[in-house]
Length: 612
Image (cartoon, rainbow, N blue to C red; front, side, top):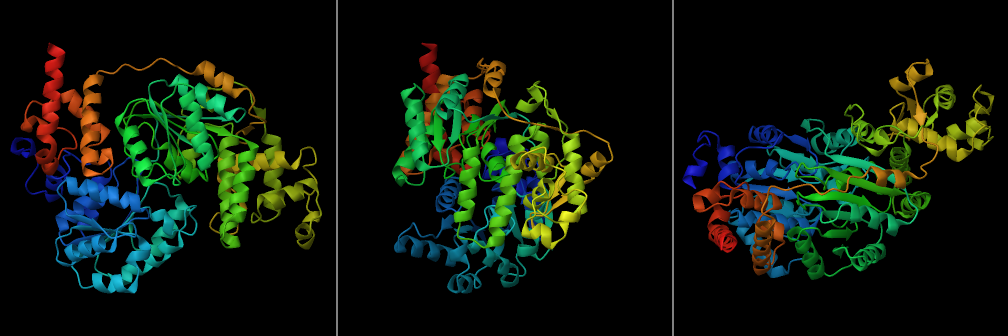
């Protein structure tokens, strides 16, 4: 172990912790800057893509700073997995939550109060009770981390009221640096997080959102079971995640794939804890398993060889879509994100929003976000360009999404776009799509008449198309960056600079009229050839079996023992002794002591059997 750590400068405590505790030689992009800011006592808002290693951004400074770090997390299961992983790494971590019995919670608090615990994981509603805050105020708190920070923003799609109270933290602990972390936050959401949690006094670090190895594709929903099976069969032998809208559909799709000869498992919140954990462990350990799940599955899962994410139904928003597809291709290999899209999905999502017990303003914003997602689905432009543009990142056409590869001609929409732009300009750039379409179609609604918009030159100029066509065009103009949607205000449409150029006759706008027969074209383009691996797959399977056994003995998920990345590195290196094993990516000092001999024995036995 000493030889493996010798290259880490003694004067850099954060790198010493990174290597000795977590087994990594260097930080990933963004981690070092975030860690340095926290160690200097500054607040940080870190927006980092799924899989970028957000947890280390607060775990490393927590151990460097000493004292107690409070971690706010929205999910009990995620907290428990994080605590289990830290303990196996030799870190004193605890959680106090509703799933534990009173004796376990009391014992955890005693360790915290005695100064034995370095990281304490709490749900926001438990943290912000008067009793907990009063007790914590007497302790040596050095750092506060707020995970899934987009939940605090009223503009975000995952707003949770219990997160609102977290805005008091900066006043309750004025000298403690706070880090807020999220994988998905557009500019309005980031601005709101900064205002709510930090009163604007925060360093914001936004890592690039681009995941260029993930191919993006959408096709019209026709026969979802047939379409799913065809897609999965083109990725035979690879692991994938299939997202469904309901628990029943999750079970039906998993059963259908199993009946069709595909190793598939179901995962949803209605299953027992033991069943969920068993299926999760199988997915993490075995090759070629398809996990069919609701959105209950995915948070905190780090399986690098997921080859695809397939949505059988429309997700809730572009933010949710981005987060979910980010679970594919973490090993850097080519991966796919594929979605089925149908009119029934739009109706169902509208109903979900309307039935939600939320203020009218929240519902209005949710409908606006759904419109943006629909525009992404309908657009004829490069999908990566649209997706990254939504998060404020410029990108050129990628050349390998379905739209870039689809050579089917699309309609020239410049004339229709100028009609829309004129109506938006004449109404003052502050009304939503429904009102603009009423003006275009010449509908004398109460709102139109009250504002004298029936007297505008644009009134009735759009009678050549139906309402649904105009709404689709508006959504595509928003997705293409010609229009902006004020999701933080009243949902009004405004003309972006790109739209003003189009109105002056500069630039082009092509739109998708319909999405017909794209499934056949996508299948014809698909490369079903399996990639070659310079890896002993039998050894990797053996290491995964050892990991699963150890996980079951300790009653933790398999990835808590070692990630797939670590097992792959282990299979490639084939370490012969503990010094070699210490050099494996992801092996820290505690796991070296705990698991080194076990895995070395498995590797030696495998090599001996092969050589016979």
